[in-house]
Length: 323
Image 1 (cartoon, rainbow, N blue to C red):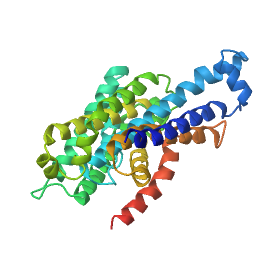
Image 2 (image 1 turned 180 degrees about the vertical axis):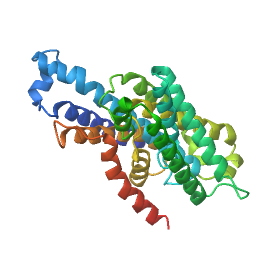
Image 3 (image 1 turned 120 degrees about the vertical axis):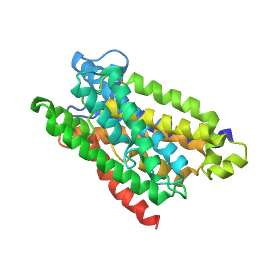
């Protein structure tokens, strides 16, 4: 069993390291393998060291952390809803977190207060979606999905109103941030630490999550304390989404595409899927960000544009299959 878990995780870890190294070497100014190796040894010229250590490495690590957080949050929501179309972006969690973060920006605060505001926005969005979707017959995948889409559209309208009322000098930065922007991500360690702690906490819960994925009634019959586990998933998904949004803005479809593809390849064992989502989601967003900053270099695209171009057709394909 342990070998079955560690083999794909080892392969994903190697891919993640290779992707990070690739992102450090590629950009508006290319670095050869010899130059990159010299920088990693603390040598090389000053310009190369500044480019790698001060600019590209924090951005690449931030992208990895954000991608992992969004993918794990998406996997948790899909387990909770038993719906492969569940995703923090589609269900409105990212929109709620964005409103909280924008409100903090307009109030002139940042750091922990901005993260806390984004967390409250994501949690409020979660309660709205589940509260509105819970009719007399309980949740259904279609009802939850439609409710999430409507709530996300409502948050979009509120965001538009906030932008219309914002000072003109703040609009460019806010708009670019809303499209997903890693240009100013210079503190990767808090989201990386949160991603690591989340995986450590969730791994022992893998068996319970496997049972919950079959339905709350069956989970309760098999001895799982369902209600605290569901509340824990609510809070964890909101916290992960809030941390991702405060680091890089609103980035869509990572939490939808990565868990679904991994389940097609690796099965539905959450003890494997959750850490695999952390590695694969991070790898995907590092690649997307590398493409975003090199495709029209020296100009840069918002990374959310790249993920949307990948995620929208995937979402439509999954929606078609779910018929």
